[in-house]
Image (cartoon, rainbow, N blue to C red; front, side, top):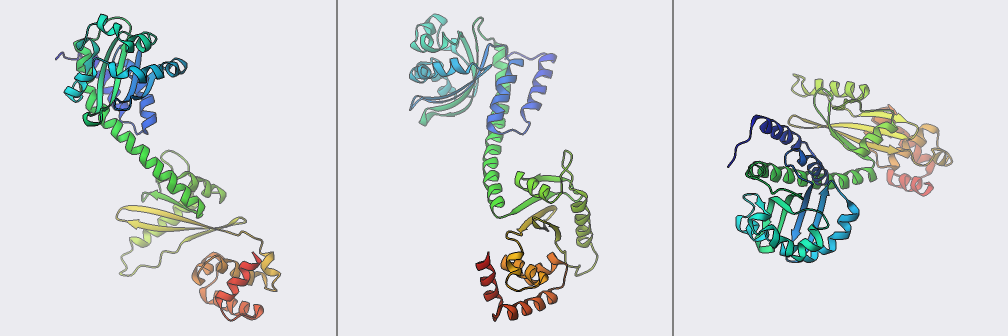
Length: 360
């Protein structure tokens, strides 16, 4: 095995540092196809997922010629099984990089239908590949290939790719995990949006560790903006969070109740609650939209405050929650409800809610 000189080691270290940047699978492949030229001198870098059992190939190039790649793809899938290096790949299970010239001479390679219908048009005679994943039973593998027209690859290139392989494998695994998490979070974010909820993970200094696109939009509706990178909670939320933390850190055996932050706007009301798991702090946001105008309930003969109380109760809020939203006590809310029952000529909360929802 050849050794890398100081300059090559430095280039490799810089490449690896960039390789482990958090990316989803699609972004990682795009990055690798555009950056591997710095390590391996080649005309084309390719990423391929090859299913020999069904003659299916997912193939991406860098630099890409999408028209040529699309035109050649049917021929590639039809002839891919002829590639002379594949027996070596399954034999070594990807533990070392493989050159086409290790399996056959250039003249033998050029006689193949695979060469005549694909590689000849891609203008490449020499290939070396590092295999990321091999499944011999299903005849499936994933490979980064390096292609060029002139000069075969050397022992140095073998050394470089064999050093890179475990990092490629780990980076691809990480990227696939990020992609799965992204899909799950997108679905979760859509669910939160439909239910008018949001969430923000923060540290004790009010720095945002994680949030969702819907949550950012929800905050903006109430005049709140997360600024900076990493994000910083807006002053209103940061001040409330610090007060909550002070209560949590209180030496009292039974600390005061941590009340939600309630933000009122014409569009509705936003409640922010604090949840804690060990050192993780999570802000849970819940929006209560005003929906229909309060005039709908005023038409029932209610006074403005009574209409507000019934409007929130009809949205499922408890007396303490309505009191927090309107800035009154839970007992006052109950007094308003009792007057509402009399005005609507009903006996209980459920009947009053039914009338309100009929109006909505």
